Length: 95
Image (cartoon, helix red, strand yellow):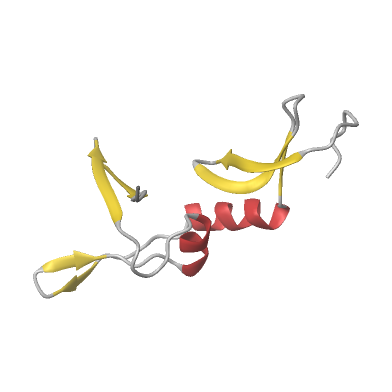
């Protein structure tokens, strides 16, 4: 993909609205994302996720598009932390 400055952009992770998406970056600092990915993030940010009870625990499910953006698959281990009133869930990096 060519940048507006004329240089070739390289594939990279680009942050948008707190999500890390696949995109392109140029040495001049310009970034590009897929318009479809941007629209998907906008929709997901306003879609509530309901907590449900299973036995003595509460569970939440991730919508498929959100799981795809976060690169979370069945069987992945997740770490969580609490910051203020926010629950932060991250994919555990093995290694």
